[in-house]
Length: 147
Image 1 (cartoon, rainbow, N blue to C red):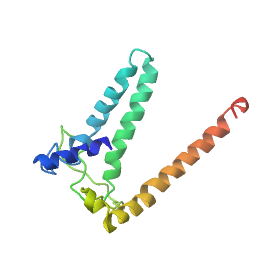
Image 2: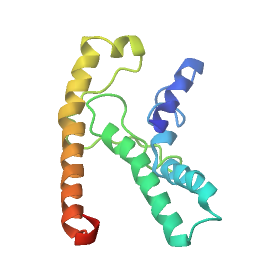
Image 3: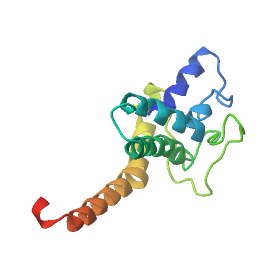
Image 4: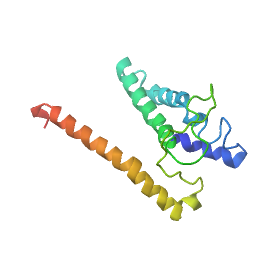
């Protein structure tokens, strides 16, 4: 959810399509890498390089996944994946996910329910399927002593 902190700027005069607007810099690949570096910093002294890299990679992937999912939505101006170097906004060719409203009032309405239904179908069910598959595969690979 951290990338969506950019909506705060809308209340202070930042335009939606600006670099610091919604789905701008905070949805970029650079931002995801910076978040990962900041998150791994507390572990710098106590962990090896490969472990720090794995932690940073997981956090970067989790952060960039937010923008990727936003690029599958059917509204807004798109996602500035390459900001600040390129402020072009992108959508994927298929946009099946219903875009969420930017206000809490609109979210807690029929439209919000429609968004949740869309996310259940296009985000949460596939994510649960992937997680269940990974857990199943991992449990089959585990040594017998660990079962």
